[in-house]
Image (cartoon, rainbow over all chains, first blue to last red; front, side):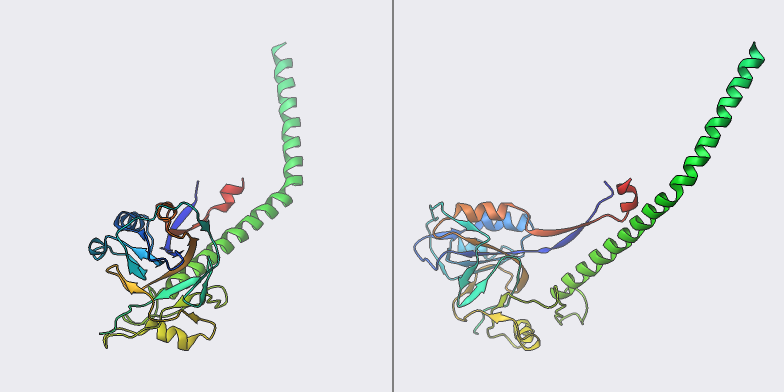
Length: 103
Length: 163
């Protein structure tokens, strides 16, 4: 009651998949969910699939490779301090991403 | 009989009136104090949330600066623990991460040449939510099913909420 909610800015999900190229951990259904829930982008240290459909998704997606199979594992750790590409990513801090374009 | 009753009622009302005045005198000070405190809290929360929003928006380049220029406001005393992906650009792109690296010494950049872009948006920024899940897709799906927008709530009428 009498509370006003200001719409904040989107968050970025950083997933450490251990750099594995044996299974994909992100696909187009997740991308659509992320879009509807207001996420700004995802950074995946692992593989993605449905790459052709991902081109039309409006959030930012960064990943290292592609793989057609969906990862079937279950073990995970939320809010962990991740070490990806020689940098520590910790929850609550901010990340800024730019295009990786070489041409 | 009737007049006696009327007198009795009048007398009772007078006593009640006196009691009210007595309590009002006694309660005036604490009530005023409480009202003052709530006004101060209301103003404070409003100012905090507005400045917080502003810095957040500025940090993401939505506010301030010209249309194409990204400005970086300080989040909590300029504590940038995140990383940026320095890379090469087409000549028309504003080099946002490069500007960030120049402006702040405590920004860490991730090693280049590792990540590729898959979405249609290639420039993005925001608060991080981290997850470690090796070859497991369902935890990622669960994480993305939760709201990805930070929400800022404030109560401009805390005065009423207190009472």
